[in-house]
Length: 323
Ligand code: NAP
Ligand code: 8YV
Image 1 (cartoon, rainbow, N blue to C red):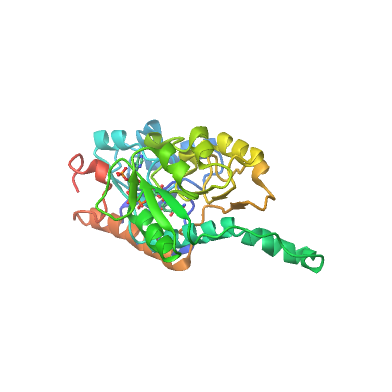
Image 2 (cartoon, rainbow, N blue to C red):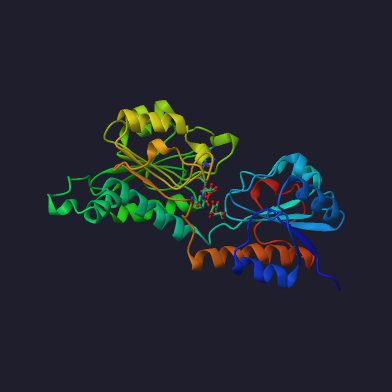
């Protein structure tokens, strides 16, 4: 029997490509040389392509989805799927799956590391040693986490992992979301109010229209000149121009950022500042976690093509497409 055909719209790392090629016929749309080559490849593969592989940060517009009229499933290699056209997928009965839970610990560890690196200026201190500046004097004092309050924007699977870890660092924990949860942490239904009460503000919500620029100039103003902002969610969650202005003006004390509005482009105004730490969207990027994500992404495709329910259909499509 011939293998089901799938199309990849993101670059596939070897450990993900291998099981995909073993189980499916994989068309590499991401690797197409130019727009003309993309058009030609789509024309060739669209009549027979039934599956798609995307990354958490991939963007697929409804008109791009429509180019694949026989598509049945999009398997996202990531927990976030804000770039997927869910309404169009529901309409076309295309399943979308993601990789929840398997990356919680990694992303929570990264958020804590980024918080420590930012508040304690460990990157600046490292550069200080390499520049030979220690021979001339001491590195300036930085800021503690213990005894301070963290406000988590999005106390979900990963947010809870961050909360547990930062509580162990002797921080008080508050959170903002649309719903108050059955937890002991302090709930805020108003983000500006929470930003005004905390020392560190961490974003870990989904991206997309509902959270676009949730962290705006007013939130940063409320966080204030002793407050730090950490983003491990999506670049779209913060108004990046307002953030750059806040850093330049000292409206906030510093920022630790794993995600940006136009990745991989990062505003140069944020470069070479002791109070800013920049990471290239690596919160889940370890061999162990990316393997677990790949395994789940492949499992969802295999289950679907075996005629079985997928393991992790995104909740917005429950009841709208067959599981
Ligand atoms: P989750 O379990 O679904 O948690 C999401 C949280 O965000 C929930 O607490 C939810 O609470 C809150 N939320 C959702 N929509 C909101 C809105 N419009 N306004 C305010 N709060 C909102 O998701 P997760 O697995 O923790 O992942 C969260 C996100 O982290 C992903 O979607 C992805 O964007 C990002 N992420 C980034 C990386 C990275 O590499 N940097 C890695 C993994 C994940 P309420 O429902 O009560 O509002
Ligand atoms: C990955 C992510 O970096 O899970 C997500 O939502 O953003 C990350 O874990 C991404 O999916 C792979 O590029």
